[in-house]
Image (cartoon, rainbow, N blue to C red; front, side, top):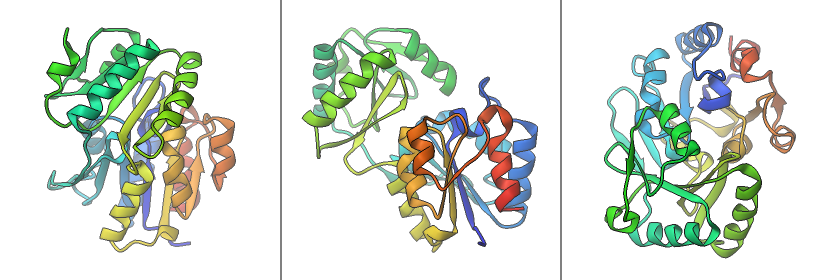
Length: 267
């Protein structure tokens, strides 16, 4: 198959555990782009937290794209033009805040290029490290969120958040997209907005058929794009059910799994 695009999750997929990209992986992706393949980054990260990797892969030079906030934004890496944006209303965010208090879990969103939260915790610090964004504490979360935001996260250890996820999926069915990007991150975006739906939008814009796309990921927020792509790839470090949903399982992120996919299918 002549694949024209490869779409990559970042954390625990493209990046190693120390959040750097292996030289082998970067070199393979640059070779693929030289052959005309579009390399697209698709992450739950804010856009700000993706530009360094985009620059390392020279996405601007090759006219590629970024899907940030789990697909709630689509950016042209060359022009930095925002091609698509989905948001949550302040009223929706306020309701999610009330639910977070009821369920006794943390909550955060993004405002003015900072992570806004009513209380700092280890999971917010993980997000700050991943994205490079500072943490802005507020003693009145509802008052602080007075305009639309792109997404909201609830935070707690995985065993707790798993139960909260099921409760809120039942309670909010049909109103929001809800999925975990990591065991301790439960994410909320506008209903119907996922990496998969944004990838579909981008593919149609570029006149690329889904059969010509490879999508690679490791977690539940990657599932829809893995299922949409002609070749859906799960990382070797992905949960078993994500691997079972994929067409191909590559090596782990620490074993240069993305480079393995590129060499096998694109070079």
